[in-house]
Amino acid sequence: MAARRRSLKELAGDPQFISGVYNYCDRWCERCPLTSRCFVYATEPQEDVREPASRDITNRAFWERLGEIFREAHEVLDEMLRERGIELAPLDPEAERELARWHDDAWSHPCAVAADEYRGAVEAWFEQAGPRFQERGEELERQDRMGLPGADPEGDARRLQDATEVIRWYQHQIAVKIMRAIGSAGSDGAIDPGLDCSDADGSAKAGLIGIDRSLAAWSEMLRQLPDDEDRILPLLAALSRLRRDVEVTFPSARAFIRPGFDTGDVVAA
Image (cartoon, rainbow, N blue to C red; front, side):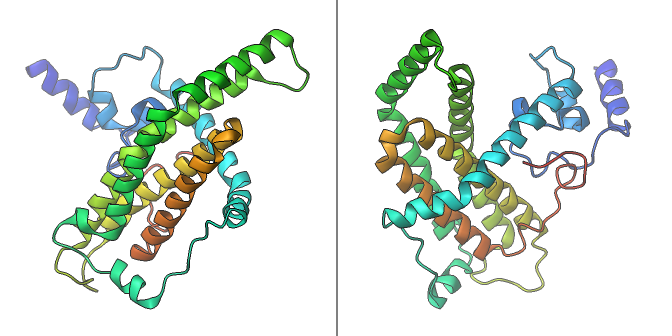
């Protein structure tokens, strides 16, 4: 035990670690680009034998690719939703005031309710998506055998797997982060101007990032499973509404500076 305590003490004094980097992360260490700078990661047993720094580089590239998908798809998605008659109606003043009220039970807040509904909708989608994944896999195998020009079956298979992993990871994470943000902001039924909402903003930003990444992943899913458009577009619309409502409820969240992630230590997705 003494040796273990000395080891932790030595780690705690190591200047390579970023103070508080783990406070507003998504706990997805396998995809994190800052494991080599995280004290919590260094103190936990790891199955991955790669050096944290080398894995960080790979993970940074992963999130940069996903970020590119999101930037390219953002306007296209809005147009597709409008064409299908799925519009994000503007908030009326009363609805905006309602979003700004805190509740004793964080789960009863409109944003938390919407996040939990999204979680359930994702679960329902995957429960029925097996045949479509199988058809897509068979299609990619045919492309690979035929060597079609311009086709990238191996890359598409990897991107489809990545999109699935991202959606599944944030499916639950979004609601958890939003609930924590609501709980941190207070539960007295009104916003207290004197309240330090930095923790709430940090948690809300983590939730918003999960929404952004999920939108990008669903965009990739839609590209590869276009026949499922009628079921994917409502999920995209629900996420877009949730993102807007969280931004209204926590107007300073996007500006919150997360240690490490937003301080130049990593290129954000």
